Length: 215
Figure (tube, one colour):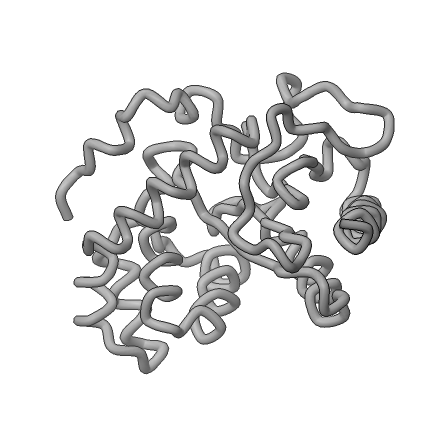
C-alpha cells in the first residue's frame, strides 16, 4: 500500500498524538469534566445532538472504554446521533484507520469493529500492516479482496482527511476522546473516569437538546 502524502498535510497532529488519554500535556481540565471547543465545529446533523468518539484500535484505553460507550450507545436518547471516527493521529495508526473506514464504507462495521479490538487486545495478534489486516478480514468471512481495495480507495482517503481535520479543530491530542455537538471535548483525563465521561455526555447532550428545542 502506498504511503499517503495527506498524513504530512501540516495539520500537526502526529507530533501531538498520544496513545492514551492520561498524558501530562492533555488540555487543562475545566473543573466540570470537559473542555469548551472554541470556535465550535459544524456538525453533520442539525436535528440531533451529535456525539463523536475518536479512537484507535491499538489503544488499550479505547478497548477498555468499549463496554462503557457501547452500553451508553444502546440506551442513548433518540435525539442523540452517535458517530465513531478513527483519525491516524500518528502515522503508525494509518492501517487501523484505513481498516475502520473500509469497514464503514462496505457496511460491515458491526462485523469488524469488536472482532478487531478483541484480536488485538485479547488474542494479542499482530494486526499492524494492511496485509495482516486483510488476512484477518478473510478469516471473519468478509470479502478480503474488496476490503483491501476499499482500504486504499479515494473514499477512504477522503474519510481519513475529514477525520483529521475534525480532530484538529477539536484540539484532540489523544484517544479515546468524545466531542459533543461540536462544542465540548471530554475523555478520561478530563472527566476522571469512564463512568464520569458518560455522566458528562448525558448532561451536555440533554442541555444541547433543550437549547435546540428552544430554537
